[in-house]
Length: 143
Length: 143
Image (cartoon, rainbow over the protein chains, first blue to last red):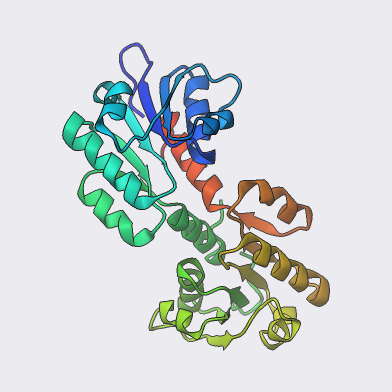
């Protein structure tokens, strides 16, 4: 991840399930400024107790919520809800309303990866990562 | 993966969804002997057209099906259905009825990983792999 001149980045994490909370907590721990958005306020309980960022409870498919999270100022936006369609919609909104450059989304269905990447969203696919890991075992190249 | 003296291994892959089919196809392509088990015969359509292994349509939670797949002779057993409980049950059956040594299971819920590992099943967690990948991005250590 590219650092800004003072080394601190502004990150928006959308979706505070296990994955989102883990990424947000880690980013906060190493000094980045983090805002986490989730529809369900209870999700913020997944954050580490040391988390020093901000939380917004709201639906990130709504433009106003993205505006409140200042996605237009974000160095990186992580779109990590549990639904590919929702992640695609939010990613597109970030890019086209707010000209966000670095949008990274979780993509469950490997067939969807191409769509995200066509629109310059970096796709992280748990399924594909599992296939890679298992293939490493099969070919004897496990790290 | 440890090779036997002639380099060919006998692998059983249980669950022929995207992940299972991919692993089975890859293993077959590099010359291993592969048997794939799935409840749904249609799942075998996920296999590559070059797949030269065997397929068994049956419920791998049943001992007879595991016996038919010769899990007692398998060098590695990949347990890759889409349900953690099913994967745990099958993994345990492989280990305790058939003394299988190398059982590798897909585990969705990260909280379940510990349980699998306590029983010497190697757990591959797509969620954890995604967290690791995203953390690499956050800390600027992406490979």
